[in-house]
Each structure stands twice: as structure tokens, then as C-alpha cells.
Amino acid sequence: MTIKIKAYSDFICPFCFLGKGPLDEIVKEKDVEVEWMPFELRPSPYSKIDPWQEPEKLSSWDSFILPAAKKLGIEMRLPRISPHPYTHLAFEGYQFAKEHGKGNEYHHRVFAAFFQEEQNIEDIEVLTKLADEVDLSKDAFKEALVSRKYREVHQEALRHAYEEAQIMAVPTFVIGEEVIQGLTSKERLAQVIDQELEKNKTNEFDGMQCSINGRNKKCQ
Image (tube, rainbow, N blue to C red):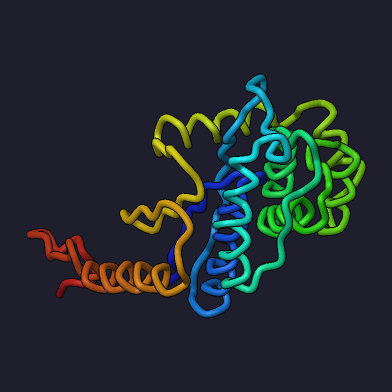
């Protein structure tokens, strides 16, 4: 049975990028389906983040983020893009990719472009190039971003994250009724997935019955 995981993240969140590592490993080992869910840490028109001008953030990068990346075997760097980009266009592009069956591929490519290649993921030309690299139509993708075709779809996804799912920080992973907040290990993810599998096995026969008129065809 396929276990579904909802992963809430933002493309400029370093811990979200690190969280992809253990999740990618789990995908290789277990029957899971990951759905990436948009979450904007600093939506427009809030002020953009500029870590290069904030000593506290630079210190956190050196003290926590880089050591965690090294431990997980993940290559990443603090992008020299000042200030860091808004992500609404990248997420609107994700909605296009998702509709065309390339959501996870696009999501991974945008993450890598920002944290490994220091590309500006607010730039439509950059996003269009990334979409092309995962075999999406360049022209259709660019037209969708220029026209803001997926703006409402993305806003509804954000409303779901903020109001319905009540996500307060990212990354957040939702597996069944279990909510895991923050960077987590592959072992922790595997444990929750296995618990969900066992729960589903336990409930497999719940509700089966015979009716007085024999309407259940499985009854004699």
C-alpha cells in the first residue's frame, strides 16, 4: 500500500532543502508518494531576506546549516543573491509542472538551482530554463508565468497551508495523522511510515458486515 506524504516547504528555506535528503532516500526504499506543498516564509510585499547583511543569519549558516549538510552528505551553499528572492513565481511554476506530471522533478530542480547553483529563482527566464530541463514546454511554461495563470491556484494552496493545515514553520511533513516539524532523519520518517502501514493493516477489515437482506455480495 502506498503511503502518502505531504511535505510543506519553501524554496528559500535551507532546512527544507536539507530535509529533502532523508525524504529522497525514503522514496527509494519504501512505497511512498510525496506531494510537495507550497509555503512562503516571506510572501510579497514583506521585506525580502538578505542573509549576507545579517550577521546572526550568517552565524547560523556556519554553526548549524553547513554542519548538518555535511553530516547528511548534501552539497549546498548560501546563495550570493542579495536579497533572496520571493518564491511565488517559482511556486506558480510548480503548479504548472504538477498539472503536467512533473511536479516533483521541477521542485527538485528549483531547489538545486538555488542552493547549489545560486540561480535567481524569482527570474522568469531562469525558471523557464529550469522547466525546460525537466522536459516541460518552455513556451507554455513561460506564458503561464507571465500571465499569472496559476496565481489563484497557488494562493489557494497557501490558504490551505496557513489556515487548514495550520502550518507554522517549514519543513513540515504530514504522514497520516502524524505531523513532523523541522528537519528529521530518514530513520524517523521510516518509523512513522511503518506505523502508518501497520495502522492501515489493522483497519483493513473494519466495517465489514452482512446485512439482513444479504445485500453485501461477500455474504452467503
